[in-house]
Length: 167
Image (cartoon, rainbow, N blue to C red; front, side, top):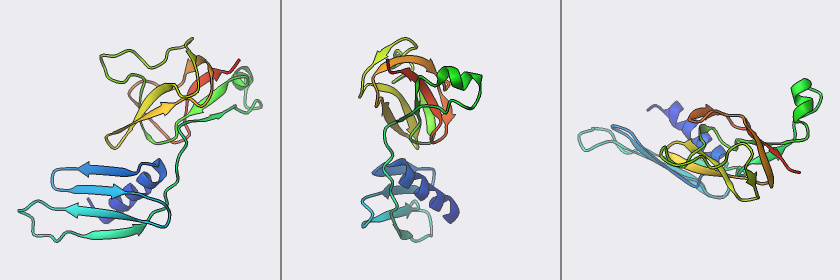
């Protein structure tokens, strides 16, 4: 893992809002801890006993941005015909980059299905980012109208995941 990849990892963790991330690969172990803006982020890279490298330690100023669990927004009505149909719904978007899962585990039922009534605080899905499973909770009450992401698929930050009818 080179310095550029480590820097990208730091940026990703800062944007995700996670407080601690541990990454272990064959010959590298990395722990990133984030705090408030006046604290440092410490990265420790360790090489196994057989390696001849020193343990570099790079402090970096944390630029943590706490991402909300899900940001409900209504789509703009002027985009196209389907946007007009969906304008009365609230869009629940992904707060982080990762892999979208509708179920807590492969042998369990989905958190929510189309037609389910939800209330504020209900878990809608999980998004895995760097081996951490982040529960995405609803910030609105209503009824699930549509699931916009496929199970086990990658999602981007701010990508629409669900349409919710608040009425």
